[in-house]
Amino acid sequence: MTRCVHYVGFRDDAYLRARRVFGGPAFIHKWWDRRAAREIGPDDLVVFATGEHDQPPRPWNAPDVEEDRG
Image 1 (tube, rainbow, N blue to C red):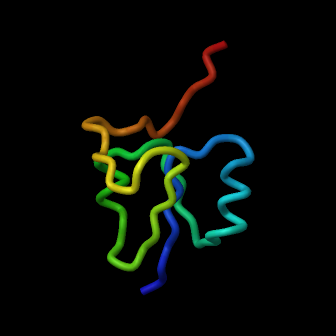
Image 2: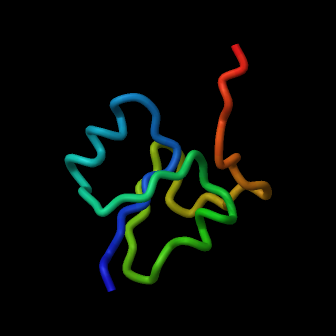
């Protein structure tokens, strides 16, 4: 099984800098929620933009799609 890197909560070019350090293949999660936690494999690496490594996941999931309503 391939190790994947899960990036949680990154914005702007912070993701690009983190990707140079930790690599991929990558999954990008808008925030740390129960769905993201379920997608982590036993050999995967999770990289948080902010917060502690043992933070609890949010009780609700991030939306899959954000629409521009402007």
